[in-house]
Image (cartoon, rainbow, N blue to C red; front, side):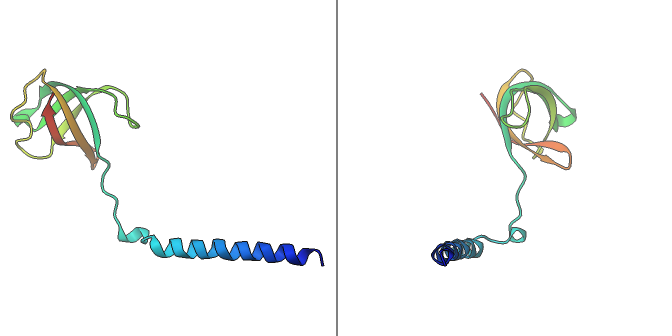
Length: 111
């Protein structure tokens, strides 16, 4: 007989928690209804060289927080004229995504 009050409290708390879970489930959209876009990385660096027709660029970049340390890498341009006003040795700030195993610069500006 000593357990009846305690069981009542446990069931009452369980019902409140269960209701909270039901409410949160109703508020959260299903994962299939929302596609996550690519992660955008941002850093700064110095231009080293360009590929043919300035469609690729090699940059010595600073560390990318949570992703990789400082490195020298080649990137592709998102648009054909993205690198038009840039020259080797320019210091830049840029953002890029990874698409099909390629690193694609979306924005770039001189510092």
